[in-house]
Length: 256
Image (cartoon, rainbow, N blue to C red):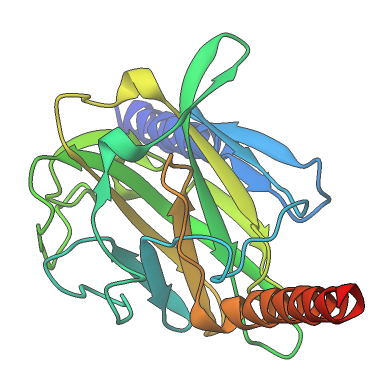
């Protein structure tokens, strides 16, 4: 009987080890640092790398900005600045579901979100996304300050969860060489969203070395550039109008 018990216990341990190995083997790591064409999927979401379009604060309209080290987390809301969210509210605020544009990829409609990672370390310019959740709700100012036991957060109807169950098994690695370009494109199926809700919440957590991360969404609303980005445009317009004024004056003098 003792031999049978030892054998059963050993079999149990082997089975548990096999299960653990199988769970680890199914972990998905999407590495977007290998080049502009890098891409991958986690669940129903598509992740793409890009450096073909300017993505700095002056060119996009971020709805979420978060900064901390060595880990950080946050979500967008009009209710305050939870976790590691940064002031002011023009960089962190509610997001209207009705403002999102739809994109057709192989016959499926998606909403598009963009991450601009900006790590300030001397050498390590990557950012690892360890949690990503998207919700819809009818209130723009929800403000939960803790996570549920399963790793979710009370932000309405769950649309997408990169790591169900609160694990950090799945992850996305992006470049993070500074503000000025998108480091990741995220596409989430429109069919996953509760289109009867008014607002979209994006919660994420990650690992970096102190720079800030900004999330924006592809919307039908043109972003308002920062004042500093307007100065060259204003100067150019002033030069054009000045030149036209001088030419008109010279023509009037010649016609006399």
